[in-house]
Length: 373
Image (cartoon, rainbow, N blue to C red; front, side, top):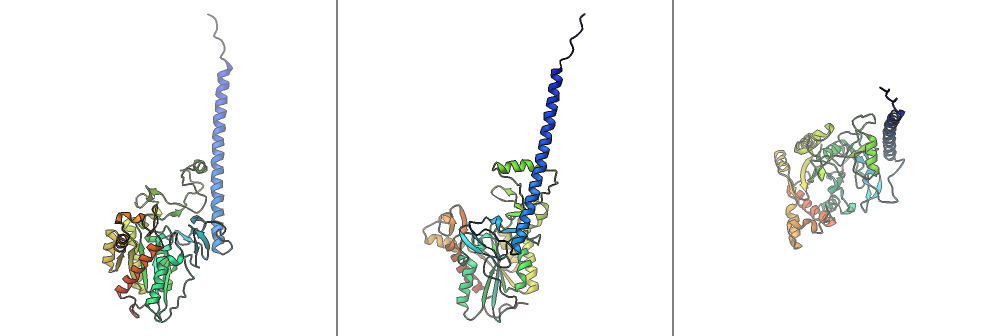
């Protein structure tokens, strides 16, 4: 029997080449992952430094073009507020000029803590509706309310402060008020309800650490470069997770740090904190909504003894005057556009008139009706 031929070196060489290619690809992916994490780390440091420089007045958001919302907001020093707008900034946002005061709120400088005798001071808590989404500051319902009350109360100092920030939920609104506006000693606090106020806010802290092994920064970077939606971010804030077309509101599905801020329980918890502050500091609270109030909020207002204004009836009456049905609200001039249901200048004017009448009916506008401590 003849001996078998010696094995060909070709298969062994092929296996070695395959092994080397596999090792090379693995090392390349590892190097790419390290580079992506380094980019994320450096990007976050740069954005945080830019934010801190703006807060110190050493830099400013862009003035030569439309600013994106993320270019004039940053992390708050108060974790329960999460984010806030740049103090003393002036930007062009959504086609209108936005001037922010020293507290990062839209509008003129804050009034002094000391009150003029017999003055009336109102603080508004809200989000993009109260902020004045796509409308001039002078057309927003709180600034209109201030003008109306000054005309109705001649001789009295009337001050209305707008603390609203786009994307806030009720829990953040109350937290921001406590940290930044409670010291103004208001007579009345107006809580403006919007349908997404039980959801996560638009932005949350970017908690992805560069040493987090649970996710690939390289994969997220590739998706971002391809224009696909991703949570990959290079700054201290990121977009909150979505639940369909809205932000998540299920406490069991949000990051652990935000479970107390969402859902009906989160709203009620915040309102009860506001009630405790009102009791201690001697101001009154009213809740209002430009269009619609859920049952749980009605029940909580009743439990607290707070007056509640649902502007839906006035909206429906205005629609009838225009020959429109309630279902045609988005087709009316009361909203910005059919695909943007934020109130237009006309919608803000309607809401402001209703609010002025509402406050007058409460009796809270009479001198001496409220004693602020």
